[in-house]
Image (cartoon, rainbow, N blue to C red; front, side, top):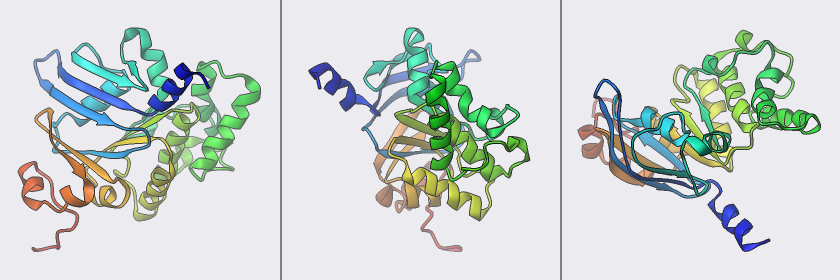
Length: 253
């Protein structure tokens, strides 16, 4: 392996955010100097009250939003207009509502959509589709109509649509929202099994405690705390100050 190849491999899955500021056209200042470094294969929760800037940050990581001040790097590549295609292949963004990602008449077509537009050859396309569905426990659903499936099944198919593009980073926006206990457990198992870097924006702090070893708290568009989930999620004063509640807190306490 050449030195350049070794450097590229070492950067795979690394996310860097430096001095990131972003203001929407209506004047809303969504991000105020966010600093964050995530190492390859880390599993990180982004938590905070509504309006804290979590979703805006995710959209910058994927390259959908831009134009602010500061820098975002994915796999060592600076996110920008000239690198957008490469970044969006590297960052698999899974939306809260799977119906925002599922639009084809069959599961197979939805999962193959991304690789087709990446120019993946036909002989590899079948392998990628089968592998992605197997990874989320949905083998055998290739010919099913996505919108006839349960919410939990559709969420797992949505994950498969990004896995088929071989991303180095997986980004989830409220993955467990609306799921029944079985669907929640199944999706959490998928997330826990993945080798990619995970960034998960969520209000489900019980899921964070079980699945994501590191927690970053955002409030007012900036990082206010960053550390081991086991520690931060037991700090009731910190959580309460930022509109959150410890998953370890007993009812009525």
